[in-house]
Image 1 (cartoon, rainbow, N blue to C red):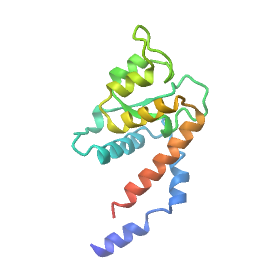
Image 2 (image 1 turned 45 degrees about the vertical axis):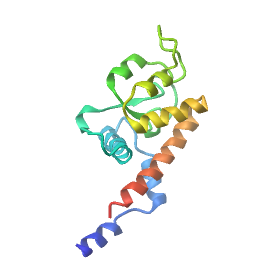
Image 3 (image 1 turned 120 degrees about the horizontal axis):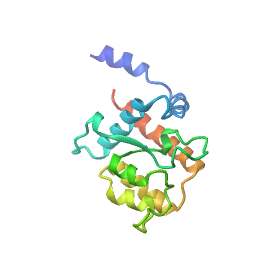
Length: 154
């Protein structure tokens, strides 16, 4: 077992290499990888929550229809119940939901059961903006968080 642990730990990439590769993850090519990562992070923060890989949806906060170059980046993707994503439709996070007079980000933060999503939306709501730079920053934060999480699995 010690030899196996040593061999596996030698295969863990350096942090810088991991972060660079992590930034390449995108919705178009890596849906299952993204879902795995987001579910692992959720499980780490809400260990009592029963998570089934098939029952969860990955959703874009900034709509796919926008012209942001990193709209499909993992930094723009969140675990979210499909019913809430359908209400959000192609609205941006700070747009008002029709008939409800509440911002999309406020509605989603209030309704979702996912702790990681709720915490992220609360922070985004407080900052009052969500743009390309914010997506890049969250991607970097997720890279660091997952590196620390996955490298502890030794």
